[in-house]
Length: 471
Image (cartoon, rainbow, N blue to C red; front, side, top):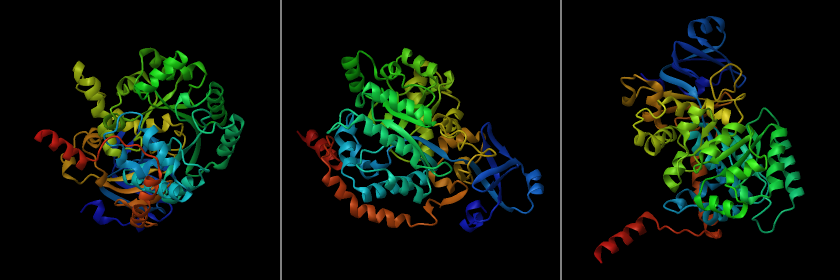
């Protein structure tokens, strides 16, 4: 019998609990005959099962046969309030944020922000993500509804506040923006699921003083500064025309790079810019599915890994499926760089798993809190069913998870030691009721927003294609 048929959600309500899976996936790889003690929301001990079973005889011992306990995935770049517009971006040319995301998010009231955020959180948890980095919403009002949504869903979230002082209408007072930023940083006490962050949408959306101030404020507060950099050719060209510098060079010139900075995408980097990133220890969010779907260039993630440049792997709100993200991360590197030079390994499989978990936590400055199964870290983890045809026979578990892993194999999702999802659905709130509510309300937001979509739906495209063929 598999672990799916042996276990129930109620088996994970005791404190402390000693997990006894077939595999525990540690930073250096999978181990067998190991146990994990979970207590007070943290990994209290990890070690050989025979030793821990003797040491913690009063803990509830939970055998999990034919399964692995692994760290939860970390989504290093997300836009939670874009959940209503998932299919709107299909087939669209670059810089869709101007025509789709800014109008859509700007039309959301607090109730819709909550619904969008909770829907995105549900998708993330179903895909095995226990932490997401939200790059900031354009919805008006404070971020309390969004924070409440992810907290209610049980998802850990780095929550970005956008601090743009240019490009908007009307232009905001820089002093007021910085006051809001300071308030945002003080709103979320340590120890919870919300970790504050400050963001500039893209460098051109802020003055030099604002870029410097927001980055410096983030550094002083020990939080992450986020921005989208070198994603689209049009933005690179605008930066060169307006400032004589590429966007990454622009950030360097105003001292906005550093260990506290996370730049999203970075798909159009020169060798000089890569050196600036390495020199400043800036981190990157590599978004392979966004590259595949939106036609961006490909960030040189294999090279960054080999050079010791810190990076996590993000969805960019494309699809929230951790295993498919691993597959895309490896496949995109192989197609963009490996095939041309005969690099059949393209990283060797394990880097993508690592940068989606432990390396991802390091990139988003949460390495002291989450990202691996280690004593003292928050118990953010997954139980993965390995009793599937794809994993028999098993020869290389990490590479197999990278290429064969499937969201359907996720039995349980735990955040801060609490079971949040079981077999894909929440155990303490109604995920299907949320879906039905969203379905009733989503058209309201889309119809109110001045969205300009250029590409037809697939059905309309078929009709156009067939009409061309008959001419």
